[in-house]
Structure formats: C-alpha cells, structure tokens
Length: 295
Image (cartoon, rainbow, N blue to C red):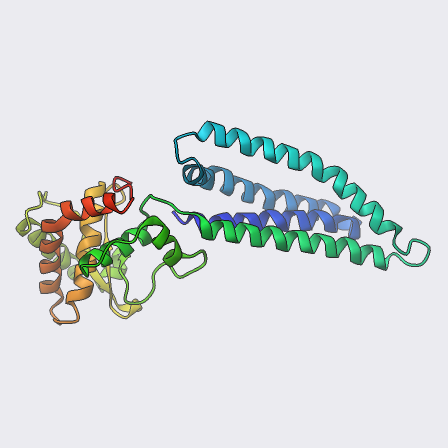
C-alpha cells in the first residue's frame, strides 16, 4: 500500500547489506556472522522491493501498457551497470591502495570509505527523489481519504500528482483531524456496545440514502479518541470497492458534521445517508480526476 516509503526503505537496506560486506575484511574472526547478516538484510530488501513494489513502479512507468518493454530495458540497464561497476570498483581499490602505499594505509582506507559513503548517499538521495516523483493512480487508504475529504467539502478532487505531493514519502499517514480509512474496531469505538450502535446507525443512514444494505453493516464510522476524535471508518477485509468508497465518504462527511453536533449517532446516521446518496457522483469524480476507482 505504501510504495514510496517501502521503496526507499528497501533501497536503504540494500545499501546497508553492501556496507556489512565491506566490513568483513576488518573483522576476519566475525566473517561468517557479518556475511550472514549481510545476506539476510539483502534478502529482505530484494524480496520487499521485487515482490511488493515492482508492480506499482511498472504501472507508473509503463503508461501505454508497455510493461514488457520497460521491464526489458530495466533488466538490460541493471546488467550493464553490474558489469561496469566490477572493474570500476577494482580500479577504485587499486587507486586507493596506491595512495601513501609506502607510508601508511590510512589514506587508502579513508579514500575507499569516503568513495563508498558518497556513492551510498547519492544512491539514497536518488531513490528518495524518485519516490517523491512517483505518481500512482490507484487508491490506497490515504489517497482515498484525501479525495473523500475534498468531495465532502465541495472542493475539486486532487489528481494523482496533487496527492503525491500531499502524501510524501515519510509523512504521517494518519494526521490528526483527517479521516482514517480501514481503521481497527477499537479505534472507532470505546467498547463493543458502542461499536454495535455505530454499526446500526451506519446501516440505517445508508439505507435511507438509497444504498442496498444487507444485514451486516458495510462499514462502521466512528471517532478515534487517540487522534483527537478524528473520524475513521472500519471496513471488512473482503469489502467490495463500493463499500470502501461509501465508508470513506461517510467518514469524511462525519468529520465535517461533528463540529456542529455532539451526538455521534446522529452525525454518523446523517453522514452515512449523505454518502449513500452521493456515492455514484463521487465515483465519477474520481474517474474525471484520473483515479482508478475500482482499486
């Protein structure tokens, strides 16, 4: 869900694995421990980046569904870089070893370490800036909350590029006084009885707004005491996209209405009815703004 943050984190982990590998000559007695730790850190980094993130990156880069071409180019570039880096690294070590070779190896160590520090910092900065530039047209919890809050306030919905600026890389995903989508049941209500009352209010409001509601509540809107009573919504893990959109809309409207009333149940009922009545318009607004509303 949080592609930008995990992309940067996995890149940092991969650099950490390389640093551990470089440290092995300085501690021969601990070679197995350091080398094993480096392999473990690299495996975690590569698994996270390849399995969890590459799909999203490919969707961002391949605008014309040309994912195979993009993937082939990236693979070729990676192999060329690996082949070029090996002789470059050997030349770097030989050049560093030649510095003060007749005097002391301190100069060589400083030159090598300094070179790799510059490379790691440059790589980390490049990954960070790439993550900042990444625009995703799929809706995660944060992006859906931003769109729902804008719609509830009558503002234009943010585009994927606008949301990328708001979302950032390491920014708080659940800021105070902003809607949290797909929260835990314990965040929405103090106890089970309050949660059941909120669920009943959501069902009644959504039904009044014209939504087709089964016996089970499609979403439950509540107010998180730990986040200064910020509105939040619980949805089942297998909820269809329409129920997630309904819940996000209801929570966004409840966030605006709670300032005018202290009756949580009344606010939740009115917000759910408004969400059900405006869900189709919200879905259309998402499409016009460039979002894939089915995700």
